[in-house]
Amino acid sequence: MRNDSRLSRMLHVLLHMARHDGPMTSEVVARMLGTNPVVVRRTMAGLREAGYVRSEKGHGGGWSIAMDLTKVSLLDVHRAVGGPRIFAIGSEHPNPDCAVEKVVNEAVEGAMREAEALLIGRLGEVSLAELAKRFDMRCTGAIDARAPKQT
Amino acid sequence: MRNDSRLSRMLHVLLHMARHDGPMTSEVVARMLGTNPVVVRRTMAGLREAGYVRSEKGHGGGWSIAMDLTKVSLLDVHRAVGGPRIFAIGSEHPNPDCAVEKVVNEAVEGAMREAEALLIGRLGEVSLAELAKRFDMRCTGAIDARAPKQT
DNA sequence: GAATCATGTAACATTTAATGTAACGTGAAT
DNA sequence: ATTCACGTTACATTAAATGTTACATGATTC
Image 1 (cartoon, chains in turn red, purple, green, orange):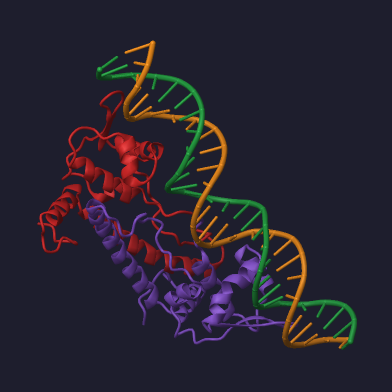
Image 2 (cartoon, chains in turn blue, yellow, green, red):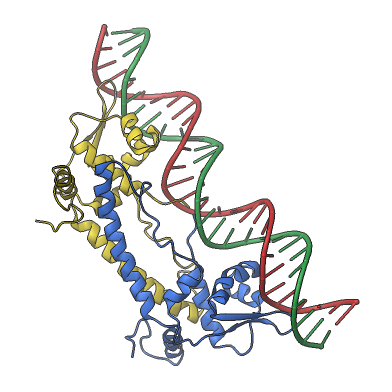
């Protein structure tokens, strides 16, 4: 299938919203992401259910932040958009009869579990506020904003 | 897209071949994997090009091991089957103009790089011989063959 | 050397989940 | 009442692995 870009897209949107006065419409967000408003509403629905954003209809409506950026991590966003599928590889038979296959699955899945735990850990360590700070630092001419230690 | 199960499948086949006298036909392998011979030939072609297996036509032909099991790791097999796509998540714009998106990509991709490095490292640590040993231990009634330390 | 066995390969269909798109409904502001 | 913007459904598109059919080629057996 295609790459799942929902996490990246939502982070992109959320940071923009955090630096934006008033609500942003799905139309505007869609142009930012290079997609269309329906995809935006569909994906942001998960964030709304999690209470991270709010949406309002009618004139002057649109999406706005409804959380404390210091309290929500990249992992939280990942989960809110319903992206549990991290790896593109895996076995067809999770619980095979064949003893050989069992040994193989245990080895491969063990490695994947470790890698997933690391990824989850890293995403959980970084808050949206931290990302926003990195953005600000980059804009104000910081020397290196690639991945500063949390302070 | 679908899950990429080529690594698991090939490991499964290779361990069986290692415990099997004489060549195995694509037909037999396909039944083992629950697929068909063409898929087997297609996937094993990568292993053949890497020199890990040999294939012979005609009567008594089929696939056989052509390597030292202690010298080939799970990572080697992963690479031989051409499975570079590990993650199902990622950004649409690897090199965006938007500064916000750059910060987002760096954060997410940084975490993914670490996780990938860990996974690659783990797969590279385990040889096919080690897997075969775990299988033998399990069959001879070892108490716990889940993921013993290498000896 | 003809028949058979097994691989090699091309061409096309299927699957799966994300994404793209069109259509229509609902609530809010003007 | 009109317009704006979200909410939702339904269906199309896309990408990559997998499934399938068909046919060619080389090796073995007779």
